[in-house]
Length: 314
Image (tube, rainbow, N blue to C red; front, side):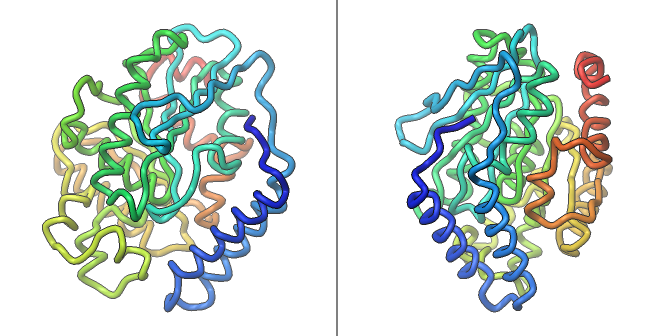
């Protein structure tokens, strides 16, 4: 599904990611650090056995939506795309690392949904320290607008996009879905739904006003006005897209913020649901698309957004 790096390059990539995670979680206790390092080791062990494309599918790599090398997305096309719904995926990584081609970002999702006639777009964006979250949000909005513009040429429907993101990517898609005109991106069309995979940054203001993990300091700084501007819960407005927050029950803050977001969404007449899963933060992402109750629950939300999607998932 992607070009496999040389073994030395792959090992170096995973070592760098592990170090970044260790730094991000310093002071948070040994438990979260051990869990994150176990996830990185598991991904490293599985990296050599990536899943191939479904029969007849195509991979269009590194489509530019801006001049910066990070402003690229990949497109996975089904064998016969005709007015296909599009899942627009944004990777996580504490706003400072990650990649659109990582196996846990795309493999199971492509295998599940591209084989059922969906198009999947996986986007990169500029990251810390080059770009703060508001700039990252602008990148995601721009990538989405370009993908919507190009969708008809792929056999996709620009009116049937679903945002999806994990961790920091979940924060960005939740913010964009809650207030699609926030970025002022020209040509951006509304999405029909948003799926936030285990974000614990729905209320940045609340996080920064209490004891928190050090990983939040670099992206969000010390300005309370910026915290509020970067909080999906404060960006919510009537007309926001329906949102499903998937949260790990192993991370109390994630589920609490998801529930608070859903409650506030209800005040605006916006549909927001919470799906609690007994999975690690990494597995919330990696296991989505694998057969089972978790994927089925997410597909029930997808089916509720559009009759055509429901027919594809029957």
